[in-house]
Image (cartoon, rainbow, N blue to C red):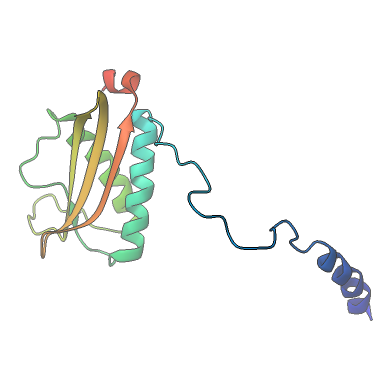
Length: 152
């Protein structure tokens, strides 16, 4: 009985709130929404976006305990792109339960990072390579704003 008292008043409300905002007829042709280029991010925002993207990829496509590392021979102390990549890598490894081999050279994935100048803007490029076959499995490019780039 209590169920009827709750369900019966709700049913008419659900019917009345149905979607009536889509017009009848065929869908419009061409681009509906204007897509603007991505806005420049500060270094911290770019790092957070890369962590989110790479973590999502790793959680969905890697096995627990697989090894992910920076390429052998990179210098994190003299190269700002590699120092930032290490910060991204440490966060992703914790999130996705991946191992970061320091002494071993047999990583399952290598994370390449670089800062490039493109059309007067600084672009942070990050690529994840599967070492077994050398294939690019994930990549992202983020424009860094000039104020943040000057402080790196």
